[in-house]
Image (cartoon, rainbow, N blue to C red; front, side):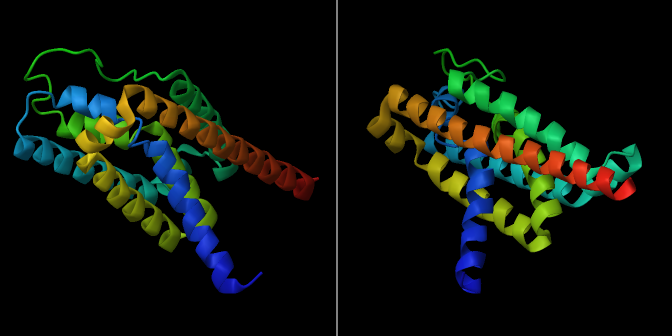
Length: 210
């Protein structure tokens, strides 16, 4: 395979890996509910806060995650298996259409006040699944790839949620939920790949030690 093509496909892979886990399209109904009654400028301000918080958290865990694992005495293969299992449960939540962190009910105006950092920034955008993904990406593909994955996924997420009202009018609640479930299947496949990679790494280590 051509080197440039392989590199391009890898860029697409890490972007999709993080973007589908952040699931901006599936979070559109939640974002709409949390910011209900806000002005356009207020909604944009909360979204900018959310994007900033998510970016900082993902960068923090991307660069300090390996140190944390070392201090705790956890191998990267063990983390990949545990992270894969976590992502698998996360994918099941997407498939069931569950949002455990916020009230998705149609409450009145003012519900969204101060929601930019929590729960939009974390745990909805930079949640356990996304944090796990960036730590696995930097372990598997290096610093350059994880930086590309984080910033490209964040920019795409900002664009999607920035047009949430328009997208919601086009897709409707049902369309958004269907898209979220499709992404749940993709996240499940990524989770299986993480688990399989971790198991292969552990088996290789055992064979070398014996």
